[in-house]
Amino acid sequence: MHGTIHYCLEETIIHKYGREKWQECLKAFNLPPNHSFITQIKEDIDEALTIDFIFKSAEILGISLQQLFDDFGIYWCTEYAPKLYSAFYKGANTTKDMVLKLTKIHEMFGKIRETAQPPRFEYKELAPNKYEVEYISQRKLFDLYISLVKGLDVYFNNQIHIEKISENKAIMTFSHY
Image (cartoon, rainbow, N blue to C red; front, side, top):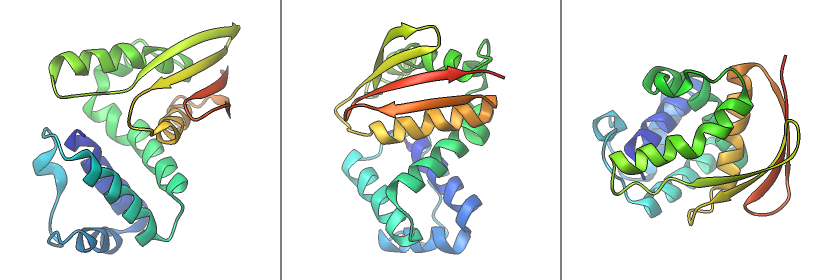
């Protein structure tokens, strides 16, 4: 998994829970207390280690995995990505706009980084502003994807209703203000 995920997780935890909690997470993986993933932001990091790190971090923070996903999703979409990936936000004015762009964005990353295996998405329009979204990835991080969509909703100040209908599909109803 790309190191930028780790660095955003680091920033999320420090921002929401404090540097001491972040250092506890590092200690659980025998990393020095002054370690920062910023030095690995462009590297690929072992995926199994990444998943384990995320799960263990939620445990250390005393929160559910879903809460950590939600915290990460909001931070990624409102703070981290707009600074680092601002070009991708251009032309998107709503959560729906951005969600429908995600496959193209991930395809671009896949071309830039040959080792990248970002998820893909298939969309089926059920009605105006209502879509069935299928998450296609071996990673099984659909709940994280849903949290990222929630983060987009915070960024665009919209209101989305998400109904998870399977382990890789959801019905998303987009509202705009």
